[in-house]
Length: 83
Figure 1 (tube, rainbow, N blue to C red):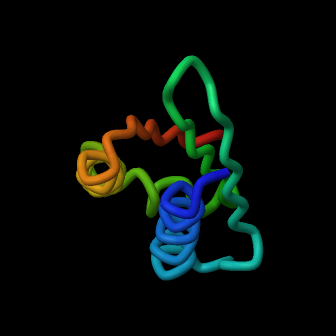
Figure 2 (cartoon, rainbow, N blue to C red; figure 1 turned 30 degrees about the vertical axis):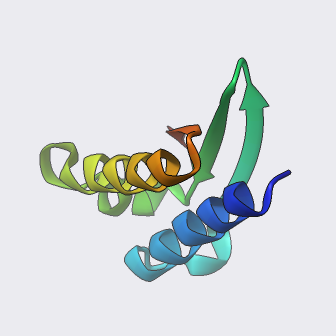
């Protein structure tokens, strides 16, 4: 795992923990697949709406943030929010 990918995972974890009511139920996994790094975010069912946001705005903002991080390192990051 590269240092940059670890930083992205930690970034997503910190942001998600700040958004939810149950930060101890936030789990972030990193999986490398086909030349891209998939960041899998899992939160408590009751906090799902807070992570997704109204009309998906919060999730879209998180995806934009990790995509911008990947541009600097010439890597592709994908955020998956797991139920």
